[in-house]
Image (tube, rainbow, N blue to C red):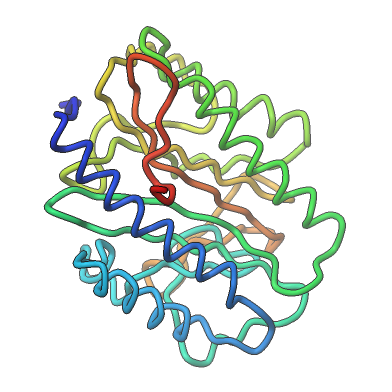
Length: 250
């Protein structure tokens, strides 16, 4: 069932999204060679708790951390560890969720660690572009396939792999609500309506589409070990422009 958000829901989701955005502001500032993914997790937890929210991921189906920290060929759901130390030229996708007043904000961003190759710069730029191409379709009366198709168009233009098994989703009182959103066209004609909130999250690879679940039963990696990027915003359909919920409120 697809839930349309009330005015009070939206207010709380904006605050949850604001907290998530504060975490990403700090991630962008502190990510550099030599920092561990566990240190990033500790800092994210502290920011979320200081803002009277709860880290949505912590304990979700047994997940042991407050953020997902996915490095290089890891696509999503990487578990932070003290012994995973970021190195010059790496990329890291940080996925953050915060629950405030029972409502969820969910956003991911992929950060370069120091100086990265031109090929990886292209991957990051294109995946971020694909996110905003998807957001540009979040208007009442559009259909889910419009979002999926906009993402797919960018991926195909840049000859990037599209992760097929994972995608975006409704978001609100739960982190994962209906509808599921593919990052390529599947013929889904579900109509967007005012009050619908969707986490749009393209995951694009420098190599093939195929991914594999690692032995920890969480981390998803590319089969060919080539880098993957992940960008995500929670977005609301309004009576006007799409509203990005996971941004700092000024």
